[in-house]
Amino acid sequence: LAAPFFVAVAYFAGWIGLQWPDGVAPQIWFWSLIGYPVCEELIFRGVLQRELLRYAIFSSSWMGVSLANLTTSVVFASVHVIWFANPSKAVVLLPSLIIGHVYERAGGLKSAIAVHGWYNLVGFCWFWA
Image 1 (cartoon, rainbow, N blue to C red):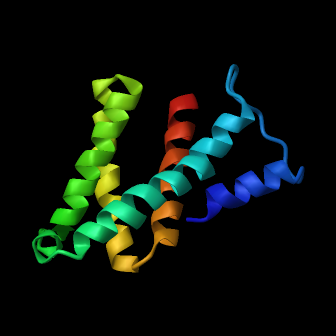
Image 2 (cartoon, rainbow, N blue to C red; image 1 turned 90 degrees about the vertical axis):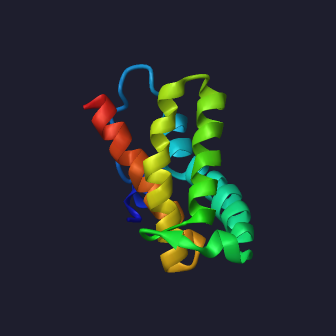
């Protein structure tokens, strides 16, 4: 799960060279694999989901998904739709539910950040393959 972090560190340390797809700057990779996952998970899991879990009603779950996770994921997907002005960005709802579940099961942000980075890496590889 830590692969995106280690790839970014190895690249920026000069240990490996990567071929970037035409028109894609290395900064985009850094932000997508490390920067955005850290920032987004700090806000959505570290603040919103954590605070919602303090209330009994949001701690209740259905099929392993807490109401806190569902609420956080809907907000997360909505922000993506609004930010990118593209309804197809709502597709992040499912990965957000998975990341939220990982956050609750692991009890911390590190796992959520790692899964988020891994998801972004897989998305990049699939998109530019």
